[in-house]
Length: 294
Image 1 (cartoon, rainbow, N blue to C red):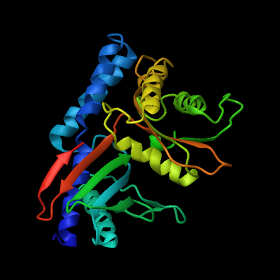
Image 2 (cartoon, one colour; image 1 turned 120 degrees about the vertical axis):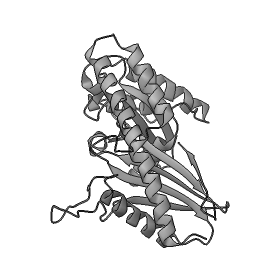
Image 3 (spheres, one colour; image 1 turned 135 degrees about the horizontal axis):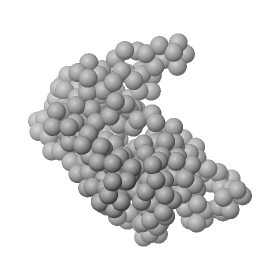
Image 4 (spheres, rainbow, N blue to C red; image 1 turned 60 degrees about the vertical axis):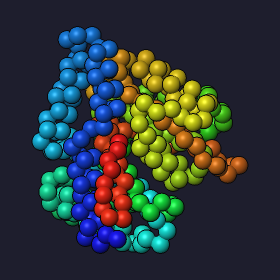
């Protein structure tokens, strides 16, 4: 069994992967977007710059973006393992990763308006621990920048302005509106994580968990799989384009989940992720052996 210090070391490695190594499916989506734009256009140039940046970061193991974001991590662990220990180890990993300049000192005390200086503060990082039956520990991390976080949105249905009722078409209208309202401010091309149902808090948590999915996967629910594909097509017809310069590549993917709700409420929660969809996954055995995945 690994010690807390050893878990911290493993978690620092996960942070390093997320901060500097863009997942292959995201890289391929960016390349397809670049190839779809008019040669010499601002959209194509923006995507070329993004791709150059990705390669430089990968080779030097340096942060892909100057805003290294809020670490959001989901840890599945064996029954009986201390969640307090794992949470503490990950918080320490954030402090150590910040000291190594894998993360920027991003945590600001909202009451005093002072930066903590080490990247960790109340609510940062966000750690979700869940038991499972495997003896291994699985870690899934995303780093979510502030600019794209500002573009998140939540809707309550019915919404007369959008002509959105409490049905799947109403959900679609809300998600598409969130993409349109972002207007490139979230560092487009973006990736959309969405959830309908739940309460205001659980809906946003699930919408962010959807961002752990690969861009090339398929939703196991046929209706939602069809909606994801439809929204990807419709979002890219808005003409917003990379960084809002116009073009055919406004979003790279749409991922949708759903939760149960109270009869009185019907929320649609939308989390916008920038093109730097920094996610990393690792499965760690009792002996500390690591298998990496994205």
